[in-house]
Length: 422
DNA sequence: TCTGGGGTCCTAGGACCC
DNA sequence: TCTGGGGTCCTAGGACCC
Image (cartoon, rainbow, N blue to C red; front, side, top):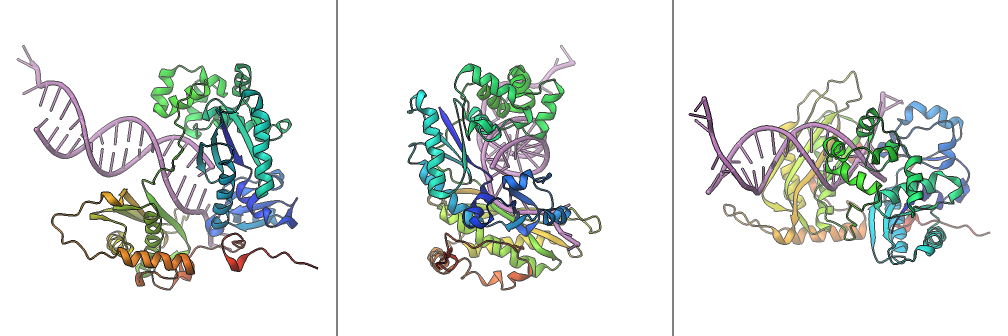
């Protein structure tokens, strides 16, 4: 049996752990640049109707009327809280698949069937006791079914946040309860197509002929179909896989016209992604740079472009990659537009031990020692204390907006939570 | 009239996830 | 005024190889 443990309204719950004074009040967490709502606690969800991903400015008035508390996203905090949850889960099973920041699969094959329910409650209660985070637990024979069980645990009040799908009767009941659009792996496009052929529930979908599923939804859809029928078709991935692409593309705090300032933002992002690249002991063999105007705007002239540069020799050297990114940016930049976003993406990622030298290029003097020193200084003194001069110093001119970010309680000495004594 | 067969690699685009 | 960011997997089609 496989369990899926999922934290409820994860980002909002993380904020509430450190702000018990806000208990009972509606709380929402905003996206980067404070643009959209990306998480809401149950009080906020209960309020009228707060659509996720709704631009905040459109409903701000309404939210203020209801006394909603806003937080900008604080990924440092959420990442740390996530690690704590995972460490607890590892004490409950030797095999844990970390699926996302707030979800993990657990192999419970060694737990006797009659103990599954008690064990699930124990997992849930232990996490709450040690972190203050509420979670739901779904258990079933396949990953897709445990996702479904988790959904039932969350939505059906009487379940007390735990749901086990074990018998054939339970499986069919669960499938009939679940609308096709809510099945894990079936998105908007596919659920429209499935509805069109008359299947409305997950149960109906399992009765659609495999040939149709295969043709319309490829092998990915076939796996979902099999798993819903109780036949395992997805791998349980215990080892963290190295990333195959590492990228970043964030909106600017304000719109930008000039190449020199966009260049600085671009260089800064290259610094960020190469740090991740080095942390997984890899090198990139290509880098992609993209720029785009604000596609929401009807008034601005629109332009977007991107370019991929193959490197002569794969590298993880920030300084070399900034140089390449800058050249690439110059090729796609056009003056006369107002830009909203620049992105960099590292591609063709290979382990650093596999790098093959280029026959026609003199080996460059190794800067690996320099980047190591830079990395260790930044770990010690804080993010981006040391960086390439190409990054510049005008970060305030393009940096994204985070007006309501909470303190980084768990990772910065200066921002520790203070408990006042009388 | 009729024009091989078996591959690899790369890219763009679509669909999905949190 | 203001609209998120970071990923994965799969397929088709083009270009190339022997």
